[in-house]
Length: 420
Image (cartoon, rainbow, N blue to C red; front, side, top):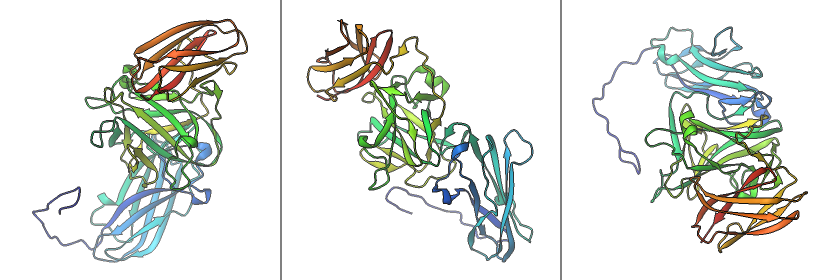
């Protein structure tokens, strides 16, 4: 076969007599209860957002005889063992040779108990199957207290997506997105992403910014920056992150001197990771889960436009638990307002606007590139409670930078885009 992208050939063809009785479980399905307005499969769901699960399976008769009383049995059991948390069956009267049909169970799995589960699917009929290895399947499923993800906890097979993979030349700035169907209003406190490591994996010094966005009304894909509800600060990947294999990046209650509302209301929301490789100097790549194929509109990636990823990115929303900072310098409070403009900056100076409710005193500003290298710094003394300071950026090249401001015993990091 000669296709646009794929090529293959087949030889050593053998024709065998098909057995009379042989059922095959083609696909196991976690169909959410669509009465709640949810249509996607998720491997990890917080208990307030489950909304019930309808287990289904696509079953095919690959034998030569009609099969009667074709029955699907599903058990959900903790991975640690014990009695099943859920057992149910569903059946169809008959299935003709060469045909397939979806079988649904008679009861909805309420999915309210926090647990890691193995969900087993098994299909039988009145007749004894000639081959039983294709009659069953087992998948992971988790009800969590806070983590929400289309991927399962520990995928058996994984791929990855990130910078340096596509395009000519390969894209050095990539965005990845997962769609989340929210049923109950909740507070998103952080995002988790698993890193591709090893020889061709993520490198320290790369960086990422997470945003939560509403869909574009035109196509349902992640909207532009005007649809961003809230965002993280710039997070620079460290060697410790790579050794651990994942990152947890908080969505702060205050960012760039302004509070941000991190509550997501019922409806569709995109978690988007904007990934930066410092013009190819430091790769950044996230793992994805190839346990099952996601619909085209559910997991996407962006280079010059949005493309279907197909797999479920291992990128989670985390609810209700704030991540505390490990730095010894505390975050500046809401009583300090900082504004950096123009942003993007094209000239020799960017202006830092400061407003506080008490005398600011000494202010230190450090500008770091996305590899975490200090590229400029300056200090100033302010007697009053408001000031606008010019920051000399004449030596900076086009790119994304972090501006770390320290004052009043705390710090805050702002993003600065330089566009020459």
